[in-house]
Length: 257
Ligand code: KIV
Image 1 (cartoon, rainbow, N blue to C red):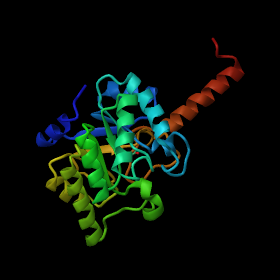
Image 2 (cartoon, rainbow, N blue to C red):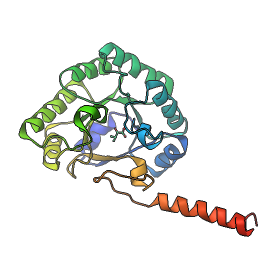
Image 3 (cartoon, rainbow, N blue to C red):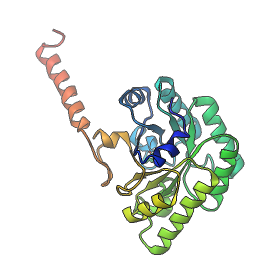
């Protein structure tokens, strides 16, 4: 198993980092075998696996249930689990308790939480102090969808400065890496240059230290994908064709042979 400390080393070596999401044993095993650098049990599973319109409804118990399915089969890839909405916003004590449950009950290596300065930085500091690696997440933070929408963040100079300060505060608090979601490429490049921990971009241009995609987007499985995502295969179409072929072969008697 690659250690969490290795990710800062990757940045020093200028080795780019690949991150993908997983929420069940089938995809987790494939990602692990294929050699992705980090698996994220992202709370996006509320949308892509459970059909919710936002990430807000999922709770800590659901995240732990899915993370257990992932860690049960993963052999070499570190696993990070998202703390869901309202499992850490009440204060660092709640955040520490939730993070502790994730590590104890799932065998994952780290947690991720959204937001920055100043409260979240203090929360991160407390969790890290307890020996739990934390990944930060700034820019478009989907748990704040009711305030931010799903829009690009950091377009004005003032907003960009705030996001940069949040990223610095998260590094100072001890996070091992940080997700930059849906911000302009030049801002992501500035943050990447400033921090010594790796930045993992999604819709944040090509200058981050790594990239993350939601696996259903990568595989073309969803009915919709964000404009910045890339589908490397159209599995939705292929699965549909397989299901239709199965039905036709049953009807024409060619299956079972
Ligand atoms: O929940 C998730 O999948 C995420 C990624 C988009 C970074 O947080």
